[in-house]
Amino acid sequence: MDALIEAAWRARDNASAEFSGFQVGAALEDESGRIWGGCNIENASYGLTVCAERVALFKALSEGVRRFRRVVVVTQASDLTPPCGACRQVLWEFCRDIPVTAVNRRGESKTWRMAELFPDPFDRSNLE
Image (cartoon, rainbow, N blue to C red; front, top):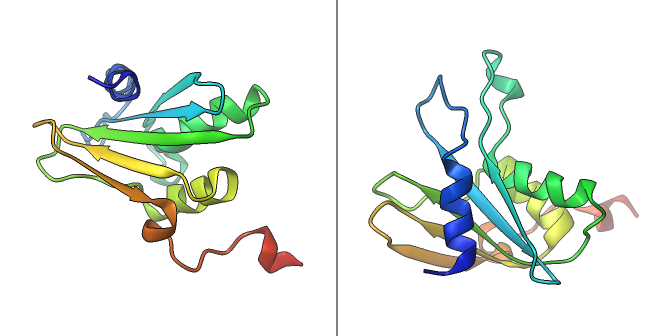
C-alpha cells in the first residue's frame, strides 16, 4: 500500500467524530516527501469542526512548508469521499492543482486534479 494512504488511515484512527460518527483521515505529501497526517475534529458547536484535510495542511503550514505534491483522503464509507467545499478552497489556495485521491473501506480509489474538483476558484489573483 502507498505510504500516503497508510498515513491517512493511521490519522483516521485519531479522529474525534463523536457527533457524526464519520471518521476521516488525510495525508499530505510535501515537496521533500515528508507526510503530514490529519483527522477530522468535531465540536459540539458544529461550525467549529475542522476537516482532516485542513488539519493536515495546517500542521504542515505551521511548520513552514509551502510546497506540496499530493493529498489522500480516506473514510470507511462505501462511496468515495472527496474534500468538502471549504477544504477545496483551502487546498487550492495553498496547494494549487495537486492530485487528490479518495480511498474507501474497500480499497477503491479515484484521483482528481484540484482544478477538476474546484473549477474557477476564488484565490489571491481575484484580489489584485
